[in-house]
Image (tube, rainbow, N blue to C red):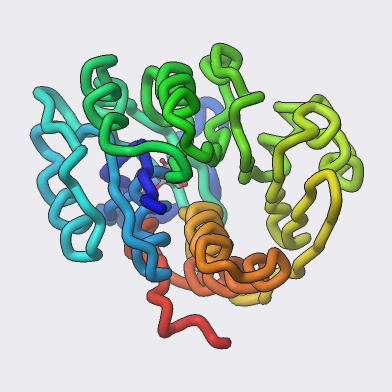
Length: 291
Ligand code: RIB
């Protein structure tokens, strides 16, 4: 089985602040750092560091060369990443003194996917291969259609959750990995305890992994439900905690481990990621995860 991640690659500009900016407020940040990021790239790096060979597809801009180098250095295949004119996708991230963040996203190269490029990439994949998606690239609806036609198993992290997702046929998705904010946006259910059932009612054939911040995570499908607590650490920067969870959870499933084991490994990996600064740079290697 081959694993393709069709997703964003960003440059994250991370500002350390006392608190997240309020409307109309101006504050001085104490530090500015630049990190590789993007939900797509972070998830590919997490899969690769967890030991899964992964192909990444997407597009980088003229300033995105270092993102390709990072992929290569981590063993992520870059054959399907296009080089396009104009700026790479980037973010401005505020991280406060408690490690909590707020992210402003500029699409740039991530919004430059074309139908031709998508078709060319997907020609290399077929029945039984897995495609991992998030919502930071354009033409996501088309990617889902074409991947489904080719018999691929579709994994979706519906993040950020916005209007574009309404154009996607989510009944074609086999696995959803999402947090409580996205689950509420998807189902309208505000009560966290009821979210797993609300998700399953919407897509009864799918499998759901719901991350709940400090409340841990829940797996739900038509037959089973499991819960996993977090491994508490001092949070330095929560950016990419969810992406790390996604990569390590999928890697465990691909290896054939049980769902409770996959949840535990993913929770351990993301606890390490939140104790370090940055997005892709904070993702642990397999040997750092205690067994
Ligand atoms: O999930 C974290 C990521 O979201 C950051 O790396 C940032 O680039 C945004 O895409």
